[in-house]
Length: 231
Ligand SMILES: C[S@@+](CC[C@H](N)C(=O)[O-])C[C@H]1O[C@@H](n2cnc3c(N)ncnc32)[C@H](O)[C@@H]1O
Image (tube, rainbow, N blue to C red; front, side, top):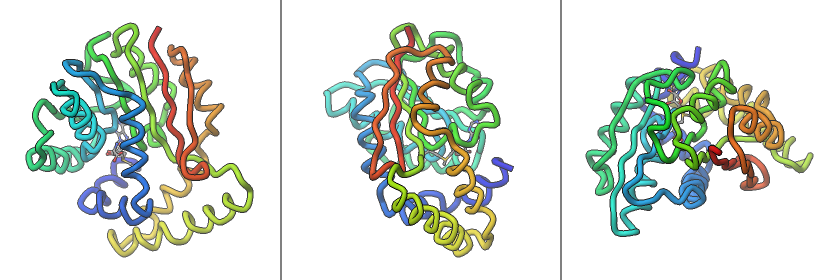
């Protein structure tokens, strides 16, 4: 189902993302990269990396420090990766980014082979999210850092009600305009509602093998950034 969903949305993914998040995904992603603070010369894995937004921002962040590093964008969907590759080619910061197609629950990356892991709006799609985090812990070197950006439920009741209305009606409507299918984006609303609260997600990350887990709610709680370190 996840494969079909992203196949259907891939061509319009960036535009639909901008519209549906009211452009908020951009400042959220920038903040996630600032929190990770990717270092020059290090290797980042952007898991469920889609069209490479986070990898490109990470490379830009490193370039601002005067040096480069490498990033691997890892995603199940070939169309998303091809769009990401084209975007990297057009970008001044696209050098050093490679693309790998595969399942986040069974990463084709060696143990301890990356310094930094990012996952943006990705773990929500995994059938076994805990397994996804265990794989991220496995491929990180000791001391390596994880940053995870995900949608979440607003904390205030009135805002949660408004947001429910938005995600159940407006999101599928925008999805219908772009993909011709209402259900393609009602999947997104359902997956956000079923997603664990920040403290519960923090527990899942800790149990997967991370320490120093923390999080910050964004924009009234509609997204949350978690960070952690591999001991
Ligand atoms: C909502 S997009 C996020 C893309 C990107 N990280 C961003 O923030 O714009 C989720 C991505 O997860 C990928 N995905 C879903 N299930 C996956 C899995 N099991 N393994 C790897 N990637 C997966 C999808 O193909 C899609 O590109």
